[in-house]
Image (cartoon, rainbow, N blue to C red; front, side, top):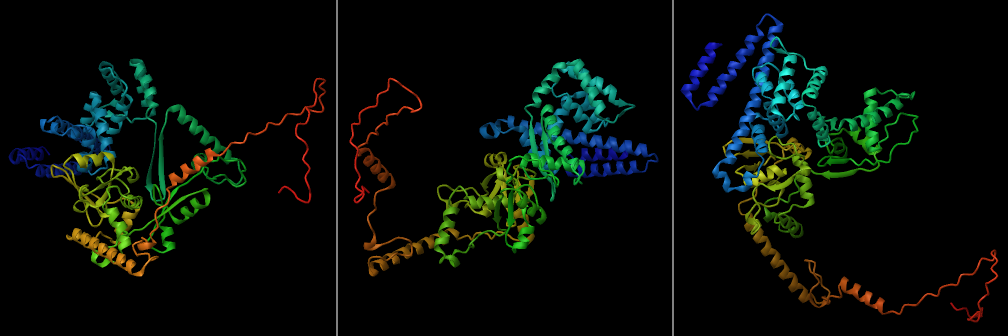
Amino acid sequence: MSATVANIQDEFEESGANSSLIATMLQFAGRDLLALAAHLPSSEDRAKVCTVLGSCAEGAGMQHALDTLETVRAEQSDPAAAEDPDYKAFDPESLAADRIAVEHNLTTSRAGNLLGKSMSVQRCTRVWNVLMYGGMSAAVALRIADELEHVVDEDKLLEIQDQILALCLKDGKCVRWSSGMTRKLHRIISKVDRVALKRDDEDSKNKRNVSMWSSTPARSNIMATLPALDAEAVWSSVDALASSWAKMESETRTAAERRADALVQMVTGIDKRPEGDCTPIGNQVCSPSITLVADMESSGARQRAYTAKGASTRERLDELLASVRSARLSKLPLRADELGTNLEDAIALLGELLGRLREETTYKPSAALRRLVVARDGTCRFPGCQVSARRCDLDHVKPFDHNDPLRGGLTREDNLIALCRHHHRDKTHNDTNYRLMPDGNTEIVFANGTRGTSVPDGHRGQGRAELGLSYEPLPDNYREQVEALAGIAKELATVCSSMAAERGPGFVSDIGETLGADKRPPGPTRQERRESATAEFRRRPRARRQRKKREPDPGIINPYWVPAPSSVAAKVVDPESPPY
């Protein structure tokens, strides 16, 4: 093994910048180490070697993440970057996470977590050194670093590290970390820096979070990060309702299933009570978003129904529609609603083409076009970014020309991608080039030549891939075709005008305008009619209402009351000529 390392060092000195060859040799050297460890006679020794190698590999990944961050910071401090203030405004940690995601083939969220963990562990120098030498796993090092997050004094931070490392390192090996070790660490922190625990309690109120992700097509996970008291209150309420259901004779669910159903009922109002339970439930309304994939028969479309966060089988869809009080149902086709790129074959469809051309030459996409793109992409199209496309911007792959839209990128489905606000700004202000392939895949090329590819994660994008659908490229003479179409439309309007002159009054042309003598002068507008009615109302005399004199209650005796004389004579109504 020493000879192998020596050969790699010699090759590195000779090849110099040939890093790919060195990387290949290191990969083979690592595999040789694992192969040698597998032949050790003792199982304990094999496990120890694999643990040390794994810890070193995790530490090396963290070190690489920190090196990437330093590289980005050096680039931003370069005098050449001062010419673009928008680039300097970018968070270096976000830019470093983007590079880590592409280089390590991770999502941007996981790359950001890796960078954040690396920065947190590196802050604890003693724990970082033990990790680099394979003395503990990255999970244990991160757990210690998270507990020491609010210890700001450097001397106290070193003292706490020395005490906890003396407890968890035995015979050069880290003991199994458990809740007992966590409690020991809390006691050490309370003795050395009690103020840090108070800062932790205050910070917990500002880190509340609820997240959701789909683990399988039929199951999703919801995780909530709450302050300790709030979490205890939520758990007590859910557990109390689940425990009350356990007393019913018809109850057959497990305790875990009852708690899950109790949480669903308390939040959404969906009836999860066992048979025979008449306890009233809340008045919450559940309105799930359900999307039906078209381009198939009704039964097949129902089997391909999806909820907003993940896939759903037909039985689950029927259960949702039967249980909830209301549901938002939308239909999205797999195929692009296109008239074709050859406009010569579609000149007769003038009215329909007019709306399409108006949409293509407008910068902001319509609501219908946005739904199509969001259902196709699913998430941000940057490789590894998991921001939902519903919260993303729609960006033109080929920039939109506001002065002459036909010369720039059109507002079409084959020129729009979903990008989160961070990657949208990165594409606009940096030298990151995007390309949308005919099959819907996106290729990203960085300024340094690094390439990345993302596939559409939306249900519509996956359905298009299953059917092998692709976008038809625009012809080179697309602008000339549009101009020819405009000329034909102008000639059509001229012909219709001449026909109206020959046919006389009452002829309505095909372009939707009544021509000739039938054209009536415009009447008053709605605002003018309203002002006229208001003025007429104010000119009318206002009749004063006569106040009725209150007669005393006959049951109350008032010696000072004298009935008033009648000033109006009684009017006699002739039954033969009634007043009406």
